[in-house]
Image (cartoon, rainbow, N blue to C red; front, side, top):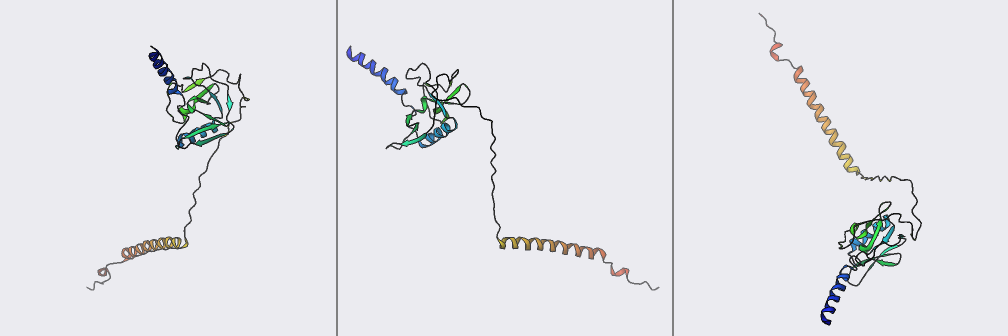
Length: 191
């Protein structure tokens, strides 16, 4: 009987561990996408649904974001000097809306929500709420400069001149043909 209880306890605890650390160790591309997302959306909250948490934690601001590589070549994201699991980290994408960082960074998860709606997320926040800033539009102008060498420019000028000269020659010869009179008309009839 003890072995059955121990086996059931092992299965239940391993089911809980199956959800732990889903996206803590990721590849370099996922880690870079997560860093970019944390830079674009610095207000985050943690919420581990598989761990049994009933509500998300307090909002905090990502002031420093980095990646660390382990001996096996996997990367982990470090936010505010703490390693985070992308599956249990949500970034603010709307006024009361937080989206799962793992889903946004394309890391597959199970047992976690893709989006969490939090009414008044700043009630017990660890940071000041963001102030509304006037929206700005950034315009990027891409310029591509090419330079043409003197020899190429000279060749283009000569080619253009040659084509113009050939056209003029054809035009002049055609006018002469039209202006020519048959010799028979010049002959005088002497009868």
